[in-house]
Length: 458
Image (tube, rainbow, N blue to C red; front, side, top):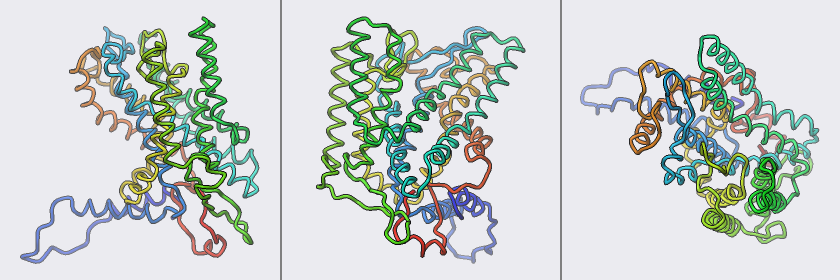
């Protein structure tokens, strides 16, 4: 077993293994139905847990998984497709029910993803340099898994759009569906650009891109500059949490683990820097609380007195969107989220010691891009496919009341089931169909023990 894929395969084999026990003797206590299945699931989780290197920081993977799932649930809750005659148009419950804006605060978690992305990219690049690996090889490995699933999404929606147009579907409906399906692509482009620039960003302070966002918004909203100027924030806005992740790697946010070659054998080992050293100008708790309270206070002030929208996602028909492009309010809100993430690291590490919790997080990380790219397709496939049954509440009706909210929540398991089907069909695209060693779960081979004196960095 060399990676999480093989661990999961072994777990599935365990689940599918027929029971060969004889019937229990008379008088033996009756086992509850499903007890064997539960034990099999626990054994499978134990396999994944045992295959994970002890050196891995599981809190990082937990934060990435929660960020991805937060975006998925947020889109499923605030994206509506209203059936109007024979067409579908996009709508949002946040337009008719603005008091639901706190929903966007809970599920707009992209800042946490960029925080983790910056931390992992800068840490991985330092590890690659220590191994003598070239920048091109490191970048190719980073981006290949990021973009492999994109080809499947583009191919399917190209064929789907062509078939819909040929069968007489309205162009507006096709445009709405394709736009929503491909909307996650912008995130990949920005994330890929920041990843490619990692060598230049390892020492960049988050204050610099934050200052760019501040001045762009000041020019747009204070001096009437053209609105297109705001698209500068598409890079600068997400650069703030990304460079914050680099600061995490440098030890400026506490709890850093430095990766250095072990003396004598060249293997990589982890060296913890004490919290009182020069590399730790802020301890872990203080850094988290400063980001959380400062970001929350700044966001509240911008919404209350500067006219920024309360919703942290775009609302159809709104004059200003906090997300497209990112505004100063979205960035300060992201800082508050990053602070909360840093404060939760220790608790997440403790929670991830439980094999079942860690197995779930590891499997989400293995298919993170597949889940992210196909979740909108799952929503639209359910919405369009069920039109044959008529206008269903929470799916085709206008999102203007609590009845719609209740109905939409009831549809979430259906969306998840359809997404599971997409995952089963297209998950191999993310791994390239080949056996590749996963950095989430890795078995320790006996012959490697003499070569690696220190813990492996993954």
